[in-house]
Image 1 (cartoon, one colour):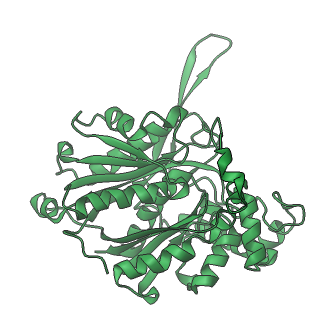
Image 2 (image 1 turned 180 degrees about the vertical axis):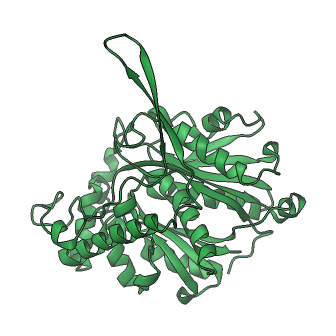
Length: 398
C-alpha cells in the first residue's frame, strides 16, 4: 500500500453531455467544451479563489489542430482565469483524462500543490481518428514483437475476442445491455448531478439576405444511447474489421465529442474554504501488454491499483470499465472475475460514446456522483489504451 504525504480530495466533478461525432458539437471547438467543464467545477466551489489553482492538467488523445497548442493553457485563458494559472496537456490515448486526474492528484499527494484541476477534452468531429498525419518510426517493425502497433483498434479487438473466446452473441448482448442501462439512467435522471448542460451556438448563413443568423440550442442529455437496440438487431450487422470476425459497429464504442473536469484540493484548502468533498483519490496504475491485444490491458492495471490502495476486488462496489469494444470489456471482466452487476451500471461507451482523451475525466465524474448517490464507498475507473496498455484508478466516496 502506497502512503502519500497528504490526501487529494475531489470537491467537484462535472462533464458535458456526450455528443456523437458530427452531432451536437460538430461546430463546437474542444477548448470551448473544456472551458465549460472548468467553469462548471469552479462554480461548484464558489468560495475558492481561482488564483490558487496550481495547475490545470488536460488529457487529449489527438492533440493537434483545434485541440493542439496546449489546450489546457488555452482553456484557462479563454475561461478568464488569472494569467498565473498554468496548464499542461497530456496524452496517454484513451486514458488521457484519467491520467490527467491522477497527475493532478499526485501533485497534491506529494505536497507540491494544494489546488489542481484534472480534465480532458476531445473532438472527433474536427480531428479525425489518428489525426491528420501518422508517421510511425519504421524501426518499430524491424522485429515481430511490435507489429501490433500498426493494427487498427478493431483488429486488436478481434485478436482479444479470438484468444479469450468471446462469442459474437455475448458481445451483442453486452452492447444491447449497455444501451438499455444508459437509456434507463437518462430517464431516471441519474446523470443529472454530473452533467453540465451546454449551449451549442451555430452560425447559419441566409443565402437570400446574406446575413448570418445565430442559432442556439441547449443540450442536456447524452446523444448516443438508443432505446431500440436489441441483440437481434445487432446480430444483423456485419463485422467491420475482419471478414469472418465478430466485432461490429454495434458492439464497439461510438466516436464522440465531449469534455469533463475534476477539481482537487488538499486538506488545508478543504478546511480553509469549508469545502465539502465528493471523494478522495486513492490509487492509480498503468501497465503494458503486447500491442496486438491492447484491449486486455486493464487485466494488468487493476490488480496493481488494488495493491497500491491496500484493497481487495470485493471492496469495489462500482466499476466504470470503458467499453472500447464489447469483446475486450467482456474479456477483462472474465479474466479479473468482476461482478457484472457492479460494472457500468449506467451503461458505457458503446451506448454513451467514447470521446478518447475526455473519457477518463468523464468517468470519474460518473463514478463519484454514482457512489455518493447509492451510498457506496470504493469505486474504480479503468480502460484499455492504444499501443498496448491498461489503466485503473481507485476512488473513495466521502
